[in-house]
Length: 150
Image (cartoon, rainbow, N blue to C red; front, side, top):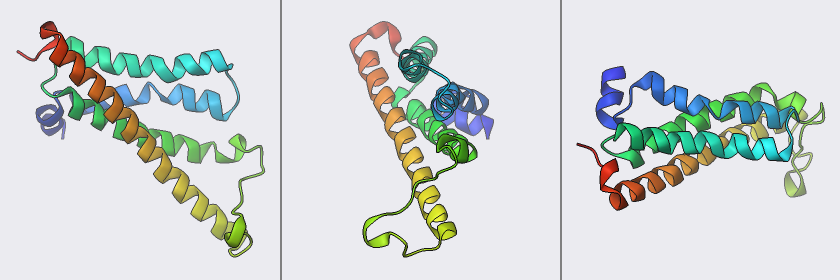
């Protein structure tokens, strides 16, 4: 898997996951209310800046694809971390379905539905973050010849 990921993204598999894992401290800090808004903001944007800096520094062949994959891994880690911290994040009072779906399912059924949709939302968020940073890096590569793959 490592050689295949290196060929398709220009980044070894463990490093793809490692770059994605840079975002996990923000998830923990946010879910457990451990950080101020300023620190939370730094924990949001610093990993993204590191992602872009890495692909520019290493001159990966396709920064968009590379960072999109990093974003997908980030979404998976985000989803897993949110699931683990679910009870603590909601202070023991998990969200409930409302409207026409309110009380249509058992509490356990609601929890399953909400957790599945939350995980899907995390994957989507990770994919968007990867695509956004990948597009920014791609534009920088196009604009600055020194960042181009050799």
